[in-house]
Amino acid sequence: MAEEYRTKSSYSGVAIAALLIAIAALIIAWMAYNRSGKDLEDSVSDTINSTTQQADDATQKAGEAAQDGTDAIERGIDMGPDGVDDGAR
Image 1: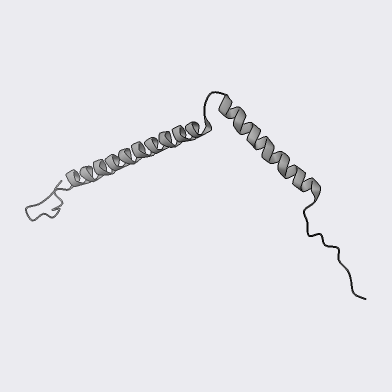
Image 2: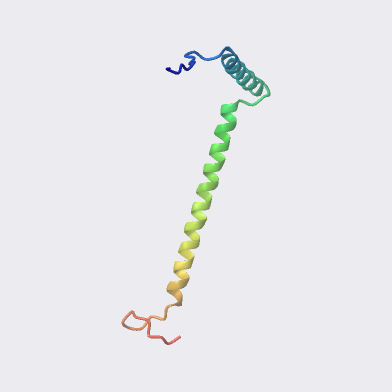
């Protein structure tokens, strides 16, 4: 006795209808957002530019802090005539 399995090779009508409704809702939401006075691409571009500037500022500050730390260490070393710390502080 061979078992027979029912297989369906096409998508169900409900799934296709749900997909079409979701795509339509996305398009309507995008259009409504654009009509609200600010374009979505402009908003994303502004956010990216702002984030990039903040990252640049943070990188600059980190570099300055690292340099300040290195300078402080170099000033703290008591350099002898041979360039080696002689321990006399």
